[in-house]
Amino acid sequence: MSEVAHIPVFPLSILPLPGELVPLHIFEPRYRQLLHDAEVNDVSFGIYFSHETNEQKIGSLMKLESIIKRYPGGETDIIVRCEDIFSLDMLLRTYKTKLYPGGHVRFWNVEVNAFPDHELYDLFLHYLKLRNITQHFNVFNLFQVANELNLDLGDRYKFLTTPEDRREAFLLNRMKFQVHILEQEERSKDNFHLN
Image 1: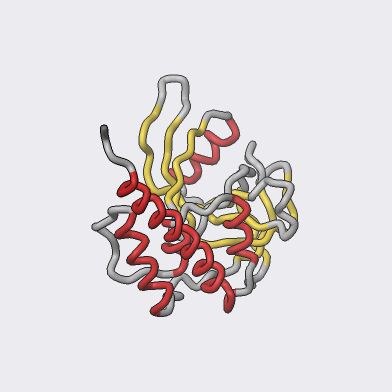
Image 2: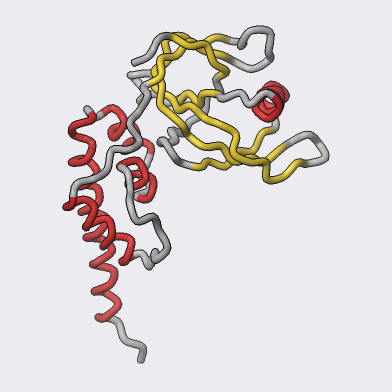
């Protein structure tokens, strides 16, 4: 892990994975100020996973990707991209002289170029085919596989807190379960006929 960094923090009950695009609706004045800083000064910020299960105090480093819509009342719809994961050392009520919170964090510097072995890769291609997804990358990293699986919060947390050398096995188990369900759905279509 890296040295301690001081960043803006947005506590939410979500846990984006590296590479994931996340839509947010910004309405509170303090987070409008954070959006302004992200837009004008290219400031990255952390989404701290504000959930009782977050014993390891992790969060996601986010970067503004695009602004979708600005509302007359000052609210904004945006898309942000997860760039890294961090561990939170300390959450602060405010970041420097700003209205929004901040925190002392340590970046994980996750390896996004970790590619799955043949078993997971082949199963993932089968999974995409079962879901009728025909347009996709030719090469996938582990985080792209995890994002495509739409893991729930518990599984996202388990995936990130699993040692790196066991993350692929974790995804393989989840993938096998998803493929099993999709194959069962396909089989059930053959069992039902219109009268």
